[in-house]
Image 1 (cartoon, rainbow, N blue to C red):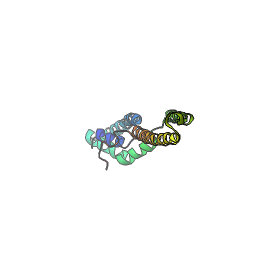
Image 2: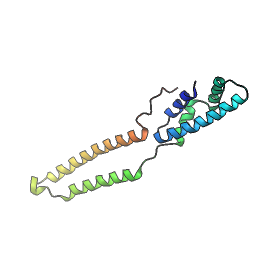
Image 3: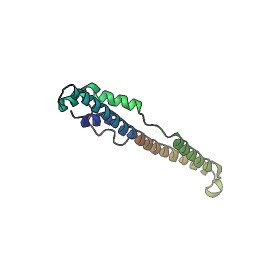
Image 4: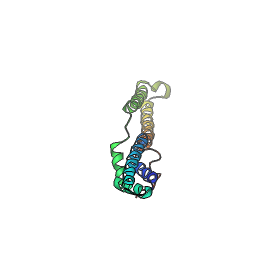
Length: 144
């Protein structure tokens, strides 16, 4: 297995897109130094690269450990702002008296429908957050 393929396998287990590049660069440096050490001992380049990869261990185990270390971070300010906007939009429906415009009992109708819209918004927002955090291309490479 080539070091390029090994690094691709390792980073495929990582959800954080930002960390993939840093981890790949760092592991590439380690592989290069290990390969050079094996070549200094008299091993041919191809076999030295294979030995260096073997020293690094399983791509799946290393990738999963790197994923635990470099977990995607939630943007709490953005989440708080969205929740604040939802709360403010809900407050406006509670303060308006709809009985003059639409007759008695319509306030309850509008409040119930506001809840339905908020639940739909919540589902869409949660799906978007999950897509951003998990990364849209997290399963490009076949795992072992």
